[in-house]
Image 1 (spheres, rainbow, N blue to C red):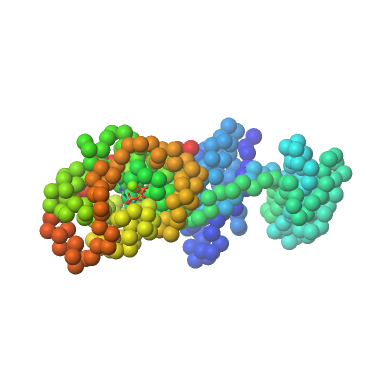
Image 2: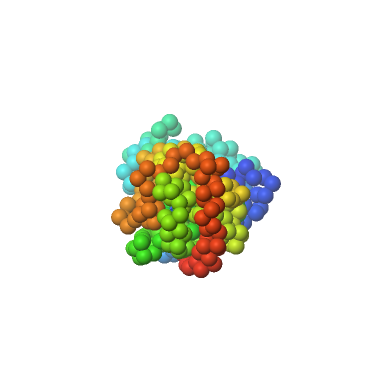
Length: 388
Ligand code: ATP
Ligand code: MG
């Protein structure tokens, strides 16, 4: 028998204008992540997912990760008669009891106004039925250990615990963003956060082979895989920045090297974004965290693009970012030791307050544009399928 899931979609209600498009994006995303083996039914304010036997575990992982879902629950369904509804309510209550709970409440919702009992009457009736038939349970409406949910709409649906989804907006509803993905802790979290705002993602990594190792790249690839769990399939572009770093090292004052490298990265990302149709860049920058992340230096590095740069961590403490990294599963990979290019070339006393009129001309005098274009042109491209 199929397993049924009731899904509460996220902020869809807010978007009355393009509700249809949002719903259909979310539906397609869920179905695609289940390889077309499950069907989503869209009803007002609710989705219903039918999953064939054996696919439940995968379905639950998908539902817990796909952007655009507030919560979901395994549900039972029946006709709109009290005996049928009562039977299912008892089943859910017994499961709660077997899980060791001793207090409960019934939360009922009558969406079908033609149903003879109103929400309150329904909850009372079913509560009484459960008390009579399931020994060891008592009602606690304020702090129940579990809740039996009942919804009467085109059919009746009964379910227990609602598990949390990621909230946010369906993947792709905000267009595509290009994530600057390093091997660090911050950028995978930034990608995850922006995926939840409806951006589908591609990622770009700048390496400095042979100064950076194969392992450093593998780490980034694995991080891309973690981001893809939430964002859906993505593509990882690897650009060789070795020549650019050498040129910066050769021609720029040492205290400017990180600053200029950042500016070159953003410029390359700008060109790549145009090629792949991305409408924005995403970075893991956080104000004041390192020298390149002062307001002045952020201004400098963003000067050669007019794309919006989304920095969801700009006001987030490192500790909170680390907590999110642990939650999404990227932390363990990020803390592997392999250095990315920036670390190897970072000066001891980097400039903190750059000025466009002072450092700008020095940067321009390096003439990096040709090398940047070449790095974009000769990139390696790897599809990173989302995994469950
Ligand atoms: P992270 O933990 O994400 O590496 P960080 O705190 O180490 O961030 P920086 O190293 O200054 O900060 O990098 C700031 C942002 O620039 C990163 O979050 C990332 O978006 C981007 N970035 C830095 N290095 C690279 C790289 N080698 N490839 C792609 N993006 C990079
Ligand atoms: Mg870093």
